[in-house]
Amino acid sequence: MKVFISYDLTDSPWGGGNQFLKNLKKYLVEEGLYCESPENADIILYNGHQFIEETLLIKKRYPNKSFVHRMDGLQKLYNDSSDTRQDLAINFNKLSNATIFQSQWAKDEFNKFNFNPEKSTVILNAADPEIFYNTEETRTNAKINLLCTSFSNNLNKGFLFYKELDDVLDFQQFNFTFIGNKPDNITYKNIKCLPPKTTIEIAERLKQTDVFVSATVNDCCSNSIIEALTSGVPVLAQNSGGNPEIVGQGGELFENIDEFLFNLQKITLNIDFYKKLINIKTMKQIASDYVEFFKCI
Image 1 (cartoon, rainbow, N blue to C red):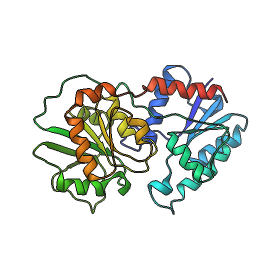
Image 2 (spheres, one colour):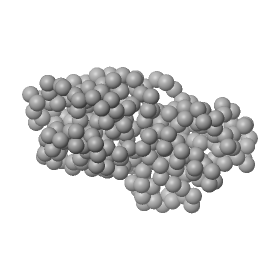
Image 3 (cartoon, rainbow, N blue to C red):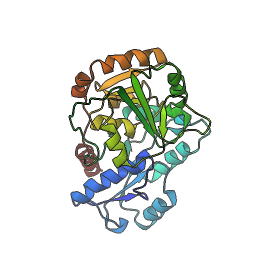
């Protein structure tokens, strides 16, 4: 069995879909399951609403190949109700023989939009193990280091919550760094903001991080949370979207600022305890789940 990914992968800082598919391709290449041409592939994997014309052309040329659609997030929830990308993805699904959802939450929410493909499964994402891994080193930071990353500047990534947090967090006890893109009209007095970094730079930063923070809402499967957990960093995340499925026992959830502050103290007093409870699948395990699903098509 050979797989071709219909996606223009890049090594530059980009979104989570690109990052995951790049990692998946690396595994498939190592296992001898990937080919660079759709002509010689048995499985064509395509993503969300992206590269529609290119994938349609492959379908036209090779109609008998098996097409698998990896669904993206629910933009009508994550962005706004007028976002057409979700409609494009649902319509784009007509090409597929099977569908992969990134979380059970995403599958359930798509079902509310009357989208429930006959052959489907749920497979979470995973981080590149060569870049993100647990060093198991004891951190000796003078303050508790908090980190948040986001390539997207969508408000639903939690920027308004961080604005509120910027006013009430005890910055004598905590350092809070945000890496990525944020809305131009959002500024912080105490939270340190840095531009987007490469995955290697993010991984190095995570080695100095005590708690990873994510206030994202309606995100189906946050790669940034997965990268943090894979690096052995407990996570404090908004109780929304696929976050609870990913975090599991390796952190805590919150729904408001008071719950955030309470659970932040809870984690910081028991960091080693939470680190031991992190249970996140490796890239090899997730890629194997993809391959096993491909075999069933």
